[in-house]
Structure formats: structure tokens, C-alpha cells
Image (cartoon, rainbow, N blue to C red; front, side, top):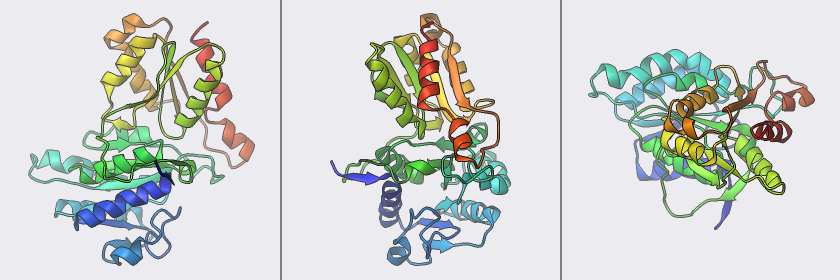
Length: 325
């Protein structure tokens, strides 16, 4: 199978959906002539024109607000917010409007829109451009939240998000943009709300998403050399969660570690732990569920500090081994 980058997979998804459905368009800051802050939409302006690849002023509130209005009136916008930190500026439009409209109008109005946004640390962009805010939006009924870890997942999930009749917040971890992976050439869609077992195992389960998936897979391979067989489960969609898959894996292995880059306090790991603890899987556990998230600090600019405020292969390994003490 051919290999393309995460960024290329996202672009392919947008282009294919725009060719398939003339209601789909891309809107955001510098998405047209510049090709997006991370180069994801390079070349799309030339193919689709400025009516469907629309550059906007520097106003996230305007970008998301325009997307909401377009979606309600029958379009299917894909809004790019240059850094996920700046979702905060469009929160009223996203949280109080997009997420609520379908419910408040009894289903007579739909809001089929996607907000794509790069998040996470690792690029030296410091405290205001490096946060992982996905748990905020998982708290909002009416939104769907996606965080793919591979190029294939990114493409299939984005196509599903664009076709969905509800607002979807689509988090893209910045360090994944240049990562390559196998992606089918034929048209395919990955349903939202369906987890994926990235590695089968029997001794313990690691539940993780985004760029932490690769770190956890590396830890699992290393621990296999010590006779410890780790299962790695990627929810892919954080809202709605594939609770059945998480519960099944926890019951199978009896030990669970939840890993995410976002700060641990109030992170999605707490919700996942509760899902397992409140299920029948609880009676199969051989150790307490453990969480490993980012430290409760702003992301530092200093490279050495930055890489150590989020989980690393070393800290993930240490956390897994504690499950066996």
C-alpha cells in the first residue's frame, strides 16, 4: 500500500469530499494563497478557487461564526483554526451556537460543520500555541471530538466528519503532520465513535490517542522483549467514546494505563477511567487503573522542559511496570 503523510491524508480527504459534494468548502486564516499554517491545503486554491477555499481576516470568532451560519443554511464547511489554542476566541460560536442549534430547534436545523485545528506541543511554540484542549470540548453535548493518530485514520475520520450532520472538532497533533503511513487509494470512511486496537496484547492495556499512540506502541514493543504483552487501544473519537471496546480490552488484560498529552487534571483520561470502573470490567482488574497525562503547567518554550512536561517513552514504561507491582 502506498504511504503518504498525515498532512497529505487530510488534504486528500478534503479534496475528495469537495469534488464529491459542491456544498463542502474550506474557510480559515491563510488556507488559500499560503496553503495553511502547516501547508495542509497547498494547491487547493488552484483547484477549487477562492469561493470554496476562502481566506479570512484574523478572527477565529468570525471563522467559526461564518461556518455555523453556512452550515445552518445548507453548506458543509470545514473551518481551519490555525492553532487549537485559538478555539478559545470562537468558543461562543462553537459551544453556545453550533453545539446547541440542532437540539433547540428539535432537529429541524442541522449544523454539518467541521472545525479542523492543530494542537499539542513539541514544536517550540510555547505556552499560547501548544495546548491540548480536547477535554474541554468533550464536555459539550452536541459536539463530536476526533483525534486521529495515523494518516489512514486522519483521512477516513475526516471524511466521516465532513459527512456528519453535527459539528465535529477535529484535532490534528502538529508533530504528526510529516509522519508517513499506509493509506488506501480507494474511497473509504472510518465511522466516528469506533476505537481501533493498534496492537493486540494480553497482559495490560494502554488506552491512548493522537501522537502518544506512537510512543505507546514503541513502549509495547520494548516491553515485549521482557515478556510483557501490551495491548494498545486508540479511541480515535473522544466524543462519542467507543465504551464497549475500552471495557472489553480492560476485562481481557486486567490492567489499564491511560496516556494523553493533555494535562492530567480534568483530562479525558479521567472519563475513560470512570467508564471502565463503572462497568463489568472492574471485576476483572488485577490492579487499580492508572492515568499518565501532561504536567499541570503551561507548555514551556525551553526544548528540554517542553519535552518533559508530557508523557515520554520513559515515563510510560515506568507507569506500565507499576501496574505489575
